[in-house]
Image (cartoon, rainbow, N blue to C red; front, side, top):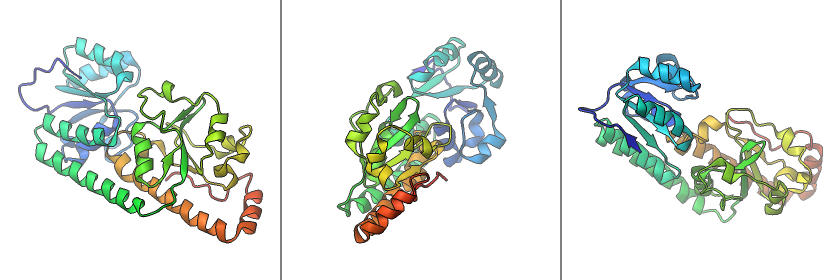
Length: 299
């Protein structure tokens, strides 16, 4: 959705209200156009040093944006609908992206490139990202074993994987236990209302990516009845930092996907080891109840 777009030339003073447009502009070598970024921006590190951060509180945010005198503001999703309307009422041009899939992320990159007159560079970046995604998909397809993954985006309430994350799980060679919920754009519609449903779906791996906070595996272990889940039994509890996979931009298709691929490879290796030495595995799993041997923390 684009509102009040009366631009006479390509924008040169851009405020990015979500992390993925900041990252994309840096990757395109067009960071000089950015005058303000979201406070949640983590990549690249240079952005946090070089660019002014826009406050999260609506009133302060509007004043900051007004002071920055942007010729374009970039937002993401209906969650920013209120601030989008307020910015539009200020007479400022704003575009709201809403990509929810891998192809949508690639389209966002191409569209953003077109908006700033960098069509060729954006098409090249999107093509390179698409190539590496398809290379990982092809590598994963050679393996018959596909672990079932329960990806938890939030713990209280429990929220399952969003659309592009569910896709990346499949591309990496696994299956999302709650793929049936992944297409819902709102997190409230991806809520796992009954925690016992996770037990019934029996994931081989649990991947925590608690948006903005550290994954705590001991909380998984404390959930009633979850000790019977294969992932808990085998110590397959892992973390991917939310900044690497939850922003729907290049980082999800690179570091986020690479991290998923590494976890799936780890599971396959561990599974072969468990099958060769089941007695040893049972002893290790019993000893590891307090801190699963397979636990990895996000980098």
